[in-house]
Length: 257
Ligand code: OAD
Image (cartoon, rainbow, N blue to C red; front, side, top):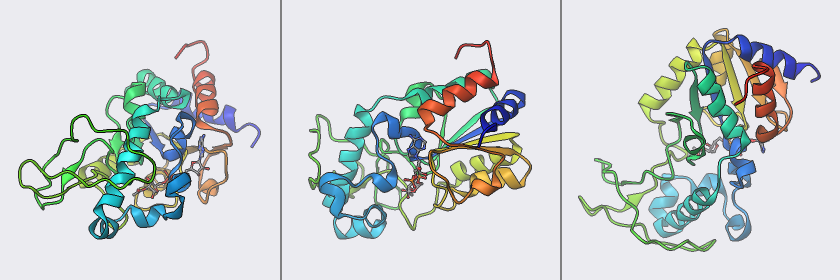
């Protein structure tokens, strides 16, 4: 929409408390495919929504662990892009900023974001499958997994149970503390930037909705329309790496991020 960048920049420049809510689209320009585009190449014969489940791990742990090892290697090889850096620039400008991400990569941290809330866990925090959920380490000197390769999960050093990825799977609850901190931030913010998310996976998708209905202006950055467009104050159609730096520059003209 013409004028949306100016409106969004005005809202951001006047805000005191900002939430940046991100999805896999913000990492697309770092070479990490979005969740729904993730199963390329040899993985294309699988359905992401069926691999990312406790049932899939129970039925075939080597397949699911191999997929996550491949995703972890790819995330580790990726670099933050100008979108992640612009988010860190917002935090530096406004210390009351909270970054809430659905992503399981660590590109926000590597771009300089201080303590992003990971609603769906992390590729880098495996834990064992026993009820205690002992934190686990990756085997040292692991090889870069080939695409499509099955890899047996390691065993927990404390109790011997198989280790699982430290991510939230479909059908599992979000980490309570993370979700509650995200709800609190969404309720208290003046502006929420929703970046690179299709907004269809709940309960994470409640976060921008909560911000909108509790009075914040929500600005969306996405090259495509989403089901949330009508709820938002501004829809910036473009990629995160192109739009976010332009938005930050327009919000605080004269400052260099
Ligand atoms: P999706 O794959 O559903 O959506 C990615 C969004 O990013 C789409 O709306 C794209 O149009 C947009 N997009 C693509 N490239 C972009 C770019 N360069 N800049 C900005 N936006 C871009 O991913 P998510 O919304 O993150 O959950 O998915 C949410 C959750 O669904 C994931 O965390 C995962 C998945 O199920 C779990 O694994 C529990």
